[in-house]
Image (tube, rainbow, N blue to C red; front, side, top):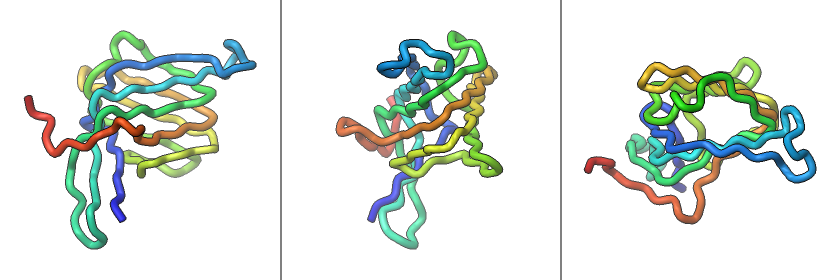
Length: 140
């Protein structure tokens, strides 16, 4: 069975979208924030016991429900230098795909341009869509 793991470092954020879930219509803390990655760095394990290979997935979206963002949106688009997701005492710099989190968490991102973001959410998920594809190189 193939296992794919999403790495924050090296991934490139294309844009983000913000929406209020039906029935909440902008209620405090009721926003859904979706981070749309132009390209996501991933590790692809093709066989048990073999080293995982680095690859790139596009597109990929990370959905944060009940989200709040601290940071300047306009300064935070582009390549990530690092990212850490915290759930309680657990710190993750990579996420298994598909990923689902039903408990509150925080996500700290730092872009290569130095811009920091801190996001908090009640729950989240990241599942490659039917149009997601893997690339072994992202060179032009």
